Structure formats: C-alpha cells, structure tokens
Length: 178
Image 1 (spheres, rainbow, N blue to C red):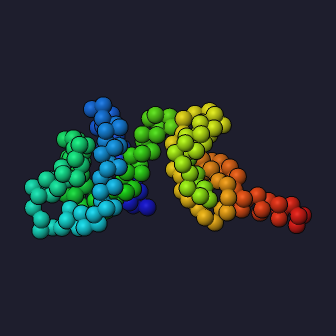
Image 2 (image 1 turned 180 degrees about the vertical axis):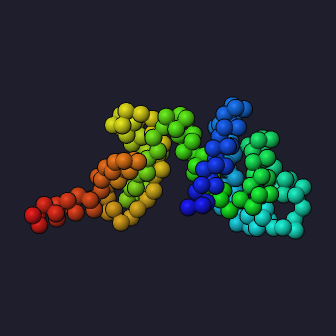
Image 3 (image 1 turned 135 degrees about the vertical axis):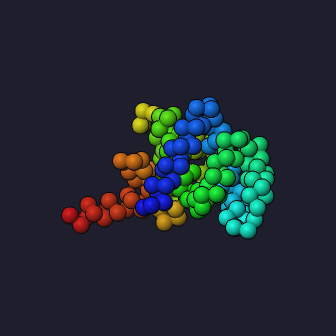
C-alpha cells in the first residue's frame, strides 16, 4: 500500500513537470527504455542503489542508460529516486505515470488475454473494433493465456468481455445445469 502512495506522488510530480516542459511522451518513452534496460541488465539496480558507488558514477550511468531519451528532467528524476532510496518503486511509478498519460490523452487502457500470440495486424484490427465499441481511443496490453483454449478476454476498468472458448464452455455448462 505504501509503495503505491509513493509511486503515485512521484508519477504525478514527474507528469506535472513533463507537462510544463512539453515532454510528456518523451518522458514516457524514456521511462519505458529505462525499464527495458533494467530487465536486460539485472545488476543495474544493484549498482544504482549501492551506497559506496559515487553519485557522479551513478549520474553517468543513468545518462548512458537513457541514451537518446536523456533529458535533464529524466536524469534529475532518476537521480532523485536513487538518492531518496525510492528506486525500488520504479515499476509502480512507471505504471502510475502511464495512467496519468492515459487520463491526459483520454485513452482507455485495456487488458486483452488471448490464447495464442496475435500478429500486429490482428492487434490493429482488434484495437479499431474496441475503439468503436467503447467510443474512445484505447491502449491494448495483450497477454497470452494458454488456459483460454481459444478466443480472447477483454477487460476494461469496469467491464469484461469474455469471448474465449473456455468462457463459452463455462456458460454452456451453467445453462445445462439449470
């Protein structure tokens, strides 16, 4: 619970600064890139949080990890996380930041579970159909769930559209039991 409160505060502060500097999407891309590199190089977290590594070295490391997304705002933000010992909340902060961006752009985030991986063209068709169904722009988070057997399940914040084979079989079973 505490981590989510901290994450929300840091994400909102970063979003406000990014908005005032007209860098909302640049910060979003920089955050995503940092997470991507962090997942590839697990030891990066240890280096950035190690108390005996000099702050100048950490600043250079942050700059090099950000690469082309290195802006003074993002560099200060990441160094603030490291210096305040809040780096462990980074994943939650990135999620909260994404929610801020979605609200700002009036985009509905959707979680889509599919039985098999979808091609990019299939995802685009699905996205267009879901935007038509909901009447607004959507951002898809597509995850493969082999337990579905076939089909897909779409989850919004307040709705679930279960078009999976597993869901259809369950509904059929429930009807037969009645």
